[in-house]
Image (cartoon, rainbow, N blue to C red; front, side, top):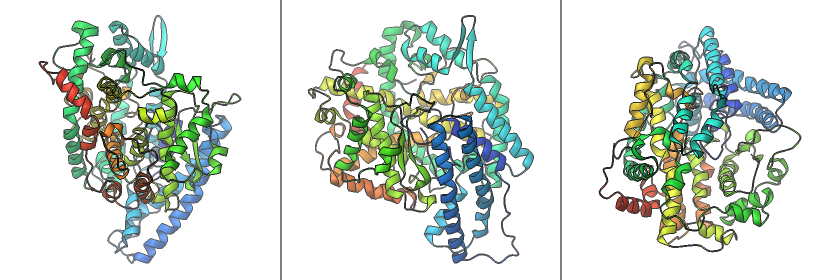
Length: 624
């Protein structure tokens, strides 16, 4: 999961991956190093000094670019070595290189203010703007505040990571409790697991409140009203305008979500009886996921047409002996079929495709450009499964973004906004259609029946449509916390108000007075921005529709695969090469011919399912 961002070490310091999962240890270490060193800086030039001119700014940015390339190469190489060989020695080196980057950035970021008011060319001005807005966690200027923020950051991450729910029968961690939510159909067991995980977070509440105070101090020192104001300023529009844009996109997708919610509620009622109301919100513990953020695990309970051929080609992969090399080569072949370049030979030499037997590694799938010089790699422990095949296509989407902008200045080596990078990989994954799988020899036949289409769309919707309101509300809650509209006394109350408003979900039990349910979601104690995932879930369909149009696809959007289309590849390359060198509307226009994010492509893609849901919901009381 996650976004490399403008600075890999200032954003989340998590490599791209295929799903919205907690970041690795790298993010925890980032919080410590950034909070510890941020603010130890050379002060900006005083008003009495002569204002620097355009040439001064251009030369300064060029020097920063060269130094960052040097520091980041050492940093990324160290982190790669650590995640592919987890030892204390490798960890120490990685932290040392991370701290070197932080120390340098803590000196140069405040110096951006020297160029305020100077007449600069657009390219230089954009690099300075990106540098100023790079970090998700600005630290207070005072040493005491920085040290306190570092300590709280470590405590919050540690409390989450070590969290367990203990009873007389023993202790269970998040993974074990999540398995219960995913697999059990016993409502009592589901409730116990759901409640149990939320016993971990109340102790975070006071610490998080202080964390917010300190983060706001850092944001205000950078010239922003609060931390949420700083986060929203990173989208080439005023913060208030971005919030309005998010509302507009949500309004576009909400009707489809409401139809899905209505049908799922009725189907779950068939399984759980009176535990599921015929009207009103869904109980949060019955949706197959600890946070009710995606509902794929309840597909067997809501499958529209049981008995249809399976859409999972895992058995075929195993039977045909597909290994890691064939799976990755197949994914690369998708991109080269569109006219993109093959991956460099070093990719095959340096990537980690399978889990080594002689050392501990981080298996979570991720995509890398070590040193930001086209040293492309993926890190996975590949198994021959349908899920892994999709993941590989997704990860290579990130690599092709890297490959097409790696010669740009480092400040431009990111997605046009933080939703773009995830959306590229997801857009490619949308082309893994039954027809494409048939062409690979993994499906004997492709059913074009209405029943097969609805089954496939329901499976996709439980992942993608169900996620939309959750992706929308996480940062809404934080924006209100950061600007003071929500106080520690109302943290939990407002959390559930927003979950009810957007998701139509309610807690299955009375929440204790000291509850801090937001802390039960990793991205809250870890301070990981979340809006990128909401945007990516919209943009991926917009990209897909645009590429399908370039490919000359005829027929429903959900049947389109851009495999083999040079025209779609050209459109993608134009977007990828821009990186963040231009505002995101320019990049969007390059591929989609419009400067506005638009969820109509998502609605078009799921058109068959939406019509089917409307029929199923006739006579039902929808909404909550």
